[in-house]
Amino acid sequence: MKTIINVALMLTLLNGCSQLQTAQNPQQLSSDDRQSAEKDKRGHPPRPMTQERLDHVLKKYSVENDKQLFWSVFNDKRRQQFDRTDTNNNDIVDAEEYVYEFEGRLDDGLEEARKGQVKQTARRFSALDKDDSNIISWEEFEQAGTRTFSWWDTNKDGVINDDDSKPDYRDSDKRNYSQKDKSYAKKHDDKHQKNKEHKHDGKHKKSKSRMSWISMPTTHSKKGMLSLFDANEDSEITTQEFVTERRAQFHLADQDNSGELIESEYLSEYEDRLDTAIDKSRRGAIKQTYVRFNALDDDADQKMTFAEFQISGKRIFNRWDKDQDGVVSAADIGL
Image (cartoon, rainbow, N blue to C red; front, top):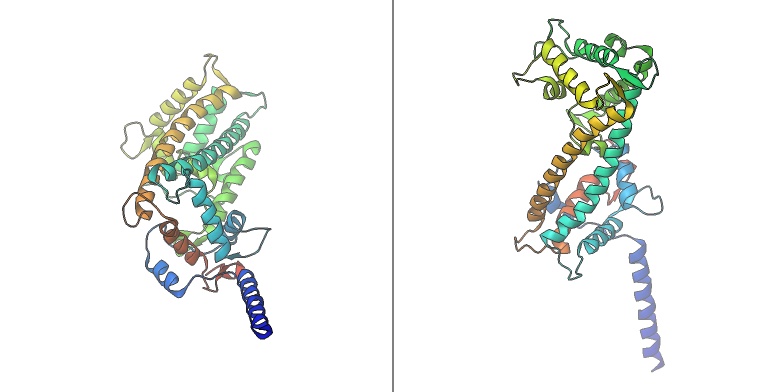
């Protein structure tokens, strides 16, 4: 009898040690999971791992400032997200629950992006206000426009079109900027140059910032210039088109018809356009979320299980874990 008790006790202790060992050694993706994930071409195409992407991943999914992400931790975080989405706690997520959860995160992100855009616009006001009077005159506004047009009209024929070569972003002095707004131009150029250095096999490695969630045409690209100033949509901008559109923009911002812009007027005009763009971006994102739900709902029964949810989770983790060692870490950078 004593022998039986001792054997039972030993088995219990061994089982406990086994459970402890399992807890200390995070579960890995199985080879079958990896093969399935490799064959699954849904979602964004694989991208090289960068330090920026790794930092983002670790911040979002890891715990206690870990320098690596195990599958078990990632799986737990995904389970928590699934459970938050499952508002009626039936272990099934329907389309409305899925969209509602995303909508909350989307609105938080759009609000953060909006704040960033408004802050950047305040900097532009300061750059345009050459005499630091806290007022932008038409002359100041027009001078900034002239510099912008000249910058893009590289062959100096008075028209911006495909005949113009790409401007050299490495030298902001070529735009004939004043000393005050050269600092603003340099910040943009440095960012552009950094993005160029992040290219790999023709693709950007950098992650999207929150501000990029809002699609706003800007004068930083020819496409943006055409969107803003090509009034007759003939794929070119004449000097007259440019001046007319700039004049209209100034007039719309000049709420009291004083012939000058104070910062609140300048911001208000931009925020009107910004909110229109946000509404468009939001509608598109919500529509795309329904598409993602249908892609994740493998058996098309309009009921997504956690197993179905983690089909994409396995694909994501597998694409991050470039060296296939079971953890996402600095070893995956550059692969």
